[in-house]
Every structure is written in structure tokens, then in C-alpha cells.
Image (cartoon, rainbow, N blue to C red; front, side, top):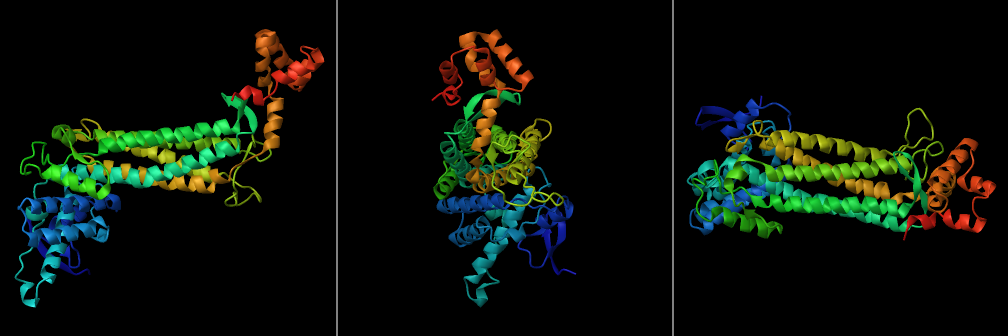
Length: 470
């Protein structure tokens, strides 16, 4: 049996694991919510630690916290921010919708650890004489779960997008850009409705992929700017009760200095308390990114299908055997990983949207689905960042063109007749296409047999490279 100690909160005594840094409120939450066995993400816990450290520093600067209390709180909160105490944060994601259990988990861990730090600085005789640091009165001073938890959501999401996802997307964009340049001389047939269309260069196709990723980066950058508006200072319902003047602004300054992001106190605490609009916008940007990446991976997978009985215009890197029954089969597994991540992120966004919906999560003065929103946003960031890197490194960077296959399909395409329409008319061009299809010949062969145009003029009009523009 695990050894315990007895602690007391406003509801009475509760057993707490003897070696746990947390206290009675966390212990109650652990007992109350054995739902997913999934604690809050490390990025979120790190943001909580940053906020608590900055809060103690601001209170100390204003003379509200004695240095003997503020200093150990700042040190202990720093350990939380560095994810060195994650094992002491066992509260399930699916807990109280305000995240109060996780906020108190942080307050209790920091208070107990700070007390130990404070007592260790004195001599043996001083250790029991040093009063304990209080989780509410000291660590949570000037705060409420209702403004701290959404602030941690904003800080963690903004940092994760900035430090993890945007650099990963930049690597993917660079890989796509490089491939666009390397394959620009390869002319292939374009397709609309999955049917043959006019010629296009592989470089042009990949430039479109790269542009999609650049657009996603821009959208995410704007989402991060919205996340930099922090709800801290509104306390329980947005009025700021018990938050000293200038406290939230001071914390935002310290957070901005330590992270390099332009964190600032929100202009309207009532909107910041009752709604999760910035997180919803961030999730939508993540969904848009996922859709773009899924589309790119799907197209690359389709263009590489075969190798003999599909389109086969692209040759994808072989990273692992593809079948347990078919020897020699190699599958586009990196593309499939991206597509699955895209599906998951779309699902995450649906959960975030439900959690932000009025009457479900956002009710009157408080959103009641903040842990759910936080875990899904951060999960989407993490998945997209990781899959973008492996997709760039293990697939896109190694793609080559099957140039012979591209030339063959261009020459055999009935859509080549499109270039003749301005010269011979739409109806005559359609007749040539029909005859070529019925007889299994190329447009060029039918035109030469009919004597529609002089050979040199026909060659000029059917020059596939010339049809792709500059």
C-alpha cells in the first residue's frame, strides 16, 4: 500500500501520497476524475509555471510579497516551467471545466516545493520555524483559475506554434520550394476532375504546394498574435476583483521579455473570460494547415501511384517494405501519416469548436471546457509539427520525377487538342479528340493523318512546354 499523509482543505481531511508535492485539492481531483488517465500537456504545465513565477515577481516588486516568500516561489515555479515536476501533476484532462483542479495542482506543488526551498536555506533549527508558503494566499495571489487557466492556454499555444510548428512548416516549405525548382523542366499532364487536362510543369505543381504552406504559416502567425492577448487580471468574472492595479500588465511584460512574444493584457476581460475566441481561431488555423498538408500529401501519393499500373509520374523514397504478403511492394507511408494527422487535427478542431460553443462550453461569464480546448489545440500543434518534419525529410526531399512516364502521358493525352481550338475551332478540335480516343491514337497522329495543319505549325501548337506559360 502506498504511504500517505493526511492534509486538510475546506471540505475536511484527505489522504495524500506521502511523496507527492501536491496537496488535498489535487488529491480530491485525482480521485474524482479517473477518466482518460491523461494529464494536462507538458507545454501547458510549463506555461502555468511561467505565469506563477512572473506573478510572484510582480507582487514582490510591488511590495506585496516578502522576498523570503517570493524568491522560493519563483524558483519552484521555474522548476514547473522547466517541466522538472511534471510527475506531480496527475489531474486528468477531463476535470472541472474551468481547470481549477489544475490551477490548484500548480499552486499546491509550487507552495510545497517553495516551502522546502525556503527551509533548506536556513539552519537545522530554522527548518520547522519557517512558516509554510500558502498555495492560495501566496502562489495564487491576485489570480483566479478563471483567468490563469485561459492565460496558460494562450501562452502555451502561442509558444508551441511559434517554437515548434512554424519552424517545421518552414522546413517543409523549403523542401517543396527546392523540389519545385529541381523539377521545373519536367512537363506533365495536368488533371481536373481526375481527368486529363492541359500540360503543366512539375515545378509549377510543387510551387503551388509550397505556396499553400506559406499561406498556412501566415494564418498561424495571425492566430498567434490573437493568442498574445492574455486574460490575466480579470480574475473570477472579468471584473478583476482582488487583482491589484497593474498586476496583470506587469506579468505580461515579464512573459514577453522571457519569451520574445508580444504578450499583453486583454482590453476586455469579460470577453476573455466568457469566450475562447482566440483559441478557436488558432484551432481553425491549425485545421486549415492540416487540410493543406493533407491535400499535398494526397496529391503526391496519387501522382506516385503505381509503379506500373497507376499514374507513376513521381518516384517516392522507399522508406520501408509495404506489405506482409506481397513481396517487393512499397507504399507511400509518409503521405499516409500526414493524411491521418490531418484527419485527427480536423477532429480536434471539432472538439475545440464544441467546447467554445455557447450553451456547451461558453456559458455566461466563463468558458467551462478549457482543459479540453487546451489539450486539443496543443495536440494539433504537436502532431502537425512532428509530421511536417518527417514528411519534408523522408518524403518530399527525396522525390524524383519519372520523366519518361510524364512525356508518355502528355503525348497520349486527348487534352492536347485544347491548344488547337483557337486555330481550328472548338468543334473541329472536339472531333479530333473523339477520333483519337476511338482509334487509340494520339492527337498528333490524327491531325497528321487528316492534314489539318502543316507539320511545323502542328509541332509548334502541340509543344507541351510552350503551353505551360513562363
